[in-house]
Length: 301
Image 1 (cartoon, rainbow, N blue to C red):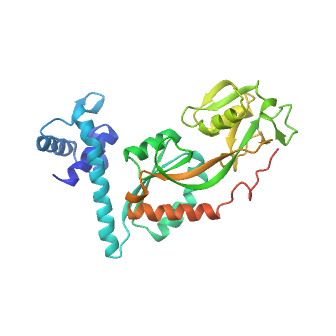
Image 2 (image 1 turned 120 degrees about the horizontal axis):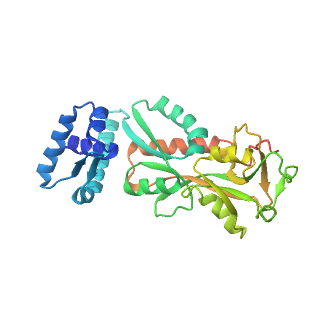
Image 3 (image 1 turned 90 degrees about the vertical axis):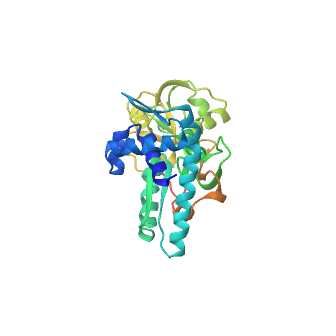
């Protein structure tokens, strides 16, 4: 059985189409189809079902997919180990991330990392907290940024504390206050992030025994800021999200400061690839130097 065939199958599954996979791999569609047919002959059962809307894994295909992903992962590890013995750093790292980390951390981390390791490829995948955890567990990504505590048993390296702050519209009655109690705004219309990105806010509200009047749910942090600016409600967001924002909103501290705990996670520290291990070290070093909430303050209004 050929590793190259496994890679073709994984691309077909990833893109949901033979033609898209062929385009990415530089093959013809008939070539990709031939490879999948060959793999199915070797296994003795169908792996995918072709339809007008694309491809779908069969039950047998779903059953072997996880093992194929593991085979490819360990093959990647082997290639990296052999290259390292020859003094060459190669590899591919798939990283799960969310908006605030993508904007404020990753550009600096990746720039420095690729200056030293130009032959290590980095692929970024954006999702919410729960999606990233699932991708790590399934082996779909090598590492991912998360908030602690995580829902599942994965290995996490704590990185930094990020203060949770209240957002108020421009003409809000409490706009002159620097510090606000959640009880003062418990009856106001609230804008909540979508499910999967709301863990940190829910922890703040639960600890304060507050059940907000949720009027809107938004899937993007910057959309939430825009809605607050238009007076549609109030919200709570992490300090890292708010850095550099230019909107006409008031940012206030909670009377009892609360933080989200940011970290980077892998399925198992014992089984990470050499390239991923180097990347994790760069992330830790960057966060040790990056301004944290006790060294950097937003221009509170």
